[in-house]
Length: 171
Image (cartoon, rainbow, N blue to C red):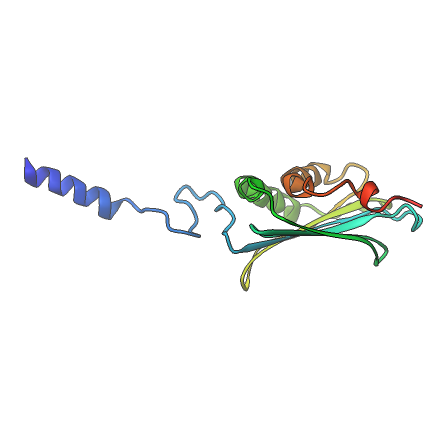
């Protein structure tokens, strides 16, 4: 009985792989965000007069979040905050969905003949490695599903700051 139990325990410990930090899960799903990752998320507004144009870039790590609001390159507002408890966990939990959406966007062609759209862009780095990088042009409904997925994913981090029109009022 002891030999059979010992053999079973050996098989369980040696033959069944255990996930390690940063490794891709056995089922092939995208890994969670590493604790050393840096997220850069950019929203580029449509082409409207400067007094109304508001684009923003946000950088998020487990410890710090920064946002810059601009109008055609002129900085209108900048804020920084300690990343709120739970924000990184929410981003990490949603990361596999973002990876899937980015893959979907890569397979699509850019919309032709559409002007006035907005762009959502995400870049996630872990040291020298770029985990994902994708820009999605949303115009006339094209890519709206991917853009919405990206916006929903970054929402916990974005909610740490006032709305864009409060940080940089139009006009």
